[in-house]
Length: 317
Image 1 (spheres, rainbow, N blue to C red):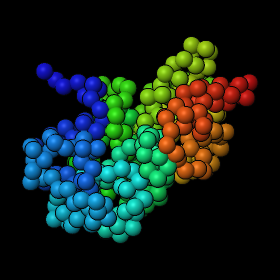
Image 2 (image 1 turned 120 degrees about the vertical axis):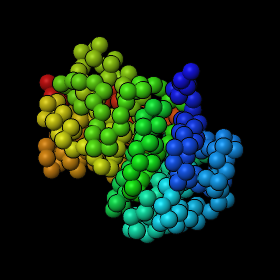
Image 3 (image 1 turned 180 degrees about the horizontal axis):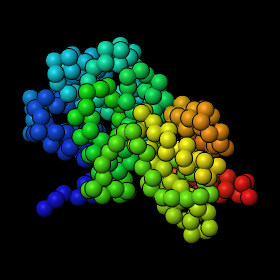
């Protein structure tokens, strides 16, 4: 019987998929920095593939350096930790040992943005998409559901390039089926529309989709574009949609500075000047709080997504 991955937490989908990848290619390695239970790889991966599992302890910078060494010998290391540790804390090691050297290292940042919840402001990394996107040679992905996560992981294992991927730990809503194929060069149009373009990535797509459907019932035609890849970025699909709707809303579980919203504004300012509203976290740190509280405080939950789309569509009239 085929396993229903949508019934699993995303971290367990990550662990199970890594096990499959190691079964298929023993060069795939799993590296952890004392957070393997949080990442979903413990206990199944070390018990099934002990030779392919390496826990370096609370030493994230060393984990990246070790991964670069393994990659230089033909291994395919996947390194996971909380986003704050997988991006901010080890940025220099990634820059020099991975990106500058163009090593085939896969970095996985777990609990992105507000999903860090009770860990608070020190662990809520709102800038990982931005800082990874500006790094030469780095590819940056943010899958939105379990089957897209599996497709992205398989793509990562099959390609030779430095890659950073966000991983939401808990279970998320189903968006795709088993026929889904990941292509980092292409956005995924989830809904067609004419009044406003809604652009989302990663965790926020599960909220953007029902908003688009509800607004359609209310007479606002929303074109929804999901971007599993923030770098490379599919400019052509965005420009074509903006030329049609002349109004764009972006939403991301990130700072509005430099990530998805930044990429959208960069493309449109050069190729199709368009009114854009960016939803996400403003220039602030996080705090210990519920997801709903943070959505409301920073203005990027479902209600705020709907209001922004309605406002932009109305301004055109």
